[in-house]
Length: 287
Ligand SMILES: [Fe+2]
Ligand SMILES: [Fe+2]
Image (tube, rainbow, N blue to C red; front, side):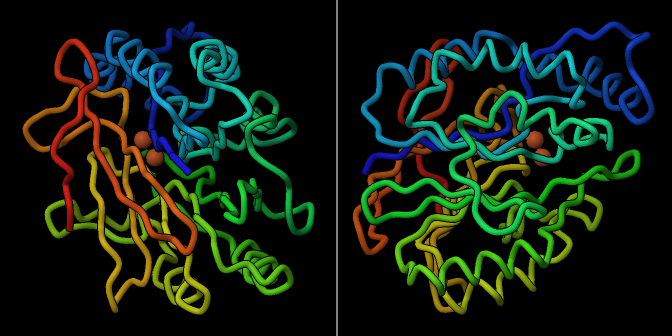
């Protein structure tokens, strides 16, 4: 199986100031004055063009499609992504797609636009647990984003979701699976996250996953790329493909990963990044 993994698209957006509410004000100002200039449309176009030219069976998008979860952002994002939304696509939301309570209730805006690409719903109605099956490999999505206060980008995977994941793995005797989650479960020393940015229950999640480990953990959120090989401490590969639509700078790489995956979890990974005009193969940032 050939997998493309992209993340943290944070697609360009223009919102009427009067339509913002609550935390969106600071989020949108932060976007307009800081983030926007690092997200030129040329990178998005280059990414779409590159993906269209590649041979793959699965495209994983691990969240942060939007900037502030505004109801006007979702249809724009959907239209912009439509060239690569098809039966091969598997998506999960990021914390920016869960920015405010109003983006989840009464209508889950992410679901409204992307439900055809979330996979099959598993577990009870109240938890986020979705799955797509390709051959004998299960691609499972969990949700770590939830509405937080101003300046907080922390994540949490509900304990119920983790329990239901364990039940699914046990009941269906699943051994070959790839887990997709927005927040990192591990960081390299030079890219540590503060308490207000990280997955707050990641130690618990890691300990649970060790009981029946995935072969790969695909995520985004921390905007730079890495690939961590499995070892005794963490018995699965970890890939961060954030942020695929951002210009790189001196501290952060951008790009996406292309994974050749065979059953039993064996895989090889390539990285592609934007060189100013198009996406080309680049050095794998490996740990
Ligand atoms: Fe992000
Ligand atoms: Fe994020």
